[in-house]
Length: 94
Image (cartoon, rainbow, N blue to C red; front, side):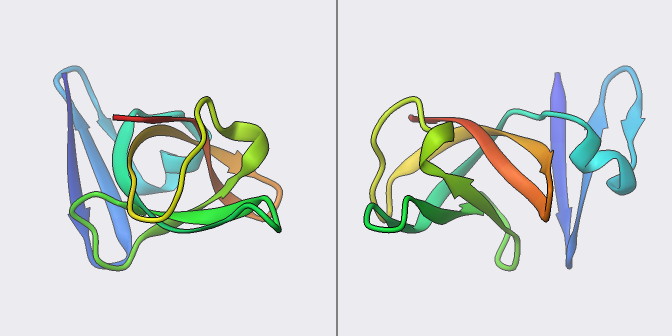
């Protein structure tokens, strides 16, 4: 079981087996939920607001979508380390 604790400007994840440090966040892929904050079909990218986090958004590219999405959709996704920072992968509607 995985618990997510969101603090200002950082995420801390708790597992029943071990604690994942915030610095390890983007080295891991972690199942999260969120809301599509912005998505442009014209430019093929957008941002997802992580659920229960006011400040944390992650980048999403159209190539990582399992289903078409639009603004304000509820989605599930994993986070991976991209070239310029965290990116959402395996994005699907809930």
